[in-house]
Length: 127
Image 1 (cartoon, one colour):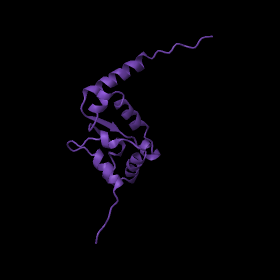
Image 2 (tube, one colour):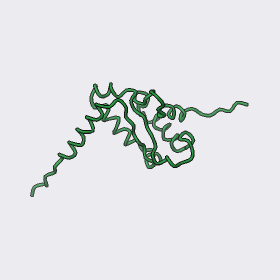
Image 3 (spheres, one colour):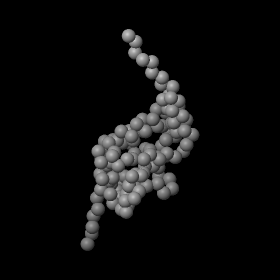
Image 4 (tube, rainbow, N blue to C red):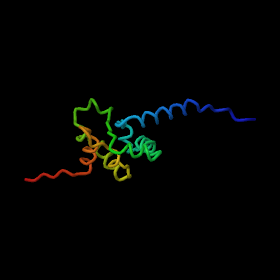
């Protein structure tokens, strides 16, 4: 008995298309889900960074080109830096070795790097 034939054509085409888009763009935004925040998962960001690191040319082009956002928190009345779960996730991401400082954009009004730094800095109140 032989195994069924699996057609990977769609998956290959999707990957080729995504890689083409990543090569052509200068700015990338990745959404982090509430589930990833709550479970301290970095699967999505790690897979994305792996894709950006697939070859030297794309890796170099990807420096300072990424921002992150948290779409499921859009209706939350707090600012992102006021949401402890997100700040904990960001702090933990540094501890887990996510190479944010290479990828996160410092251009324009991108918030990812500011949030990351804020997550690692404690508040001090001076009287």
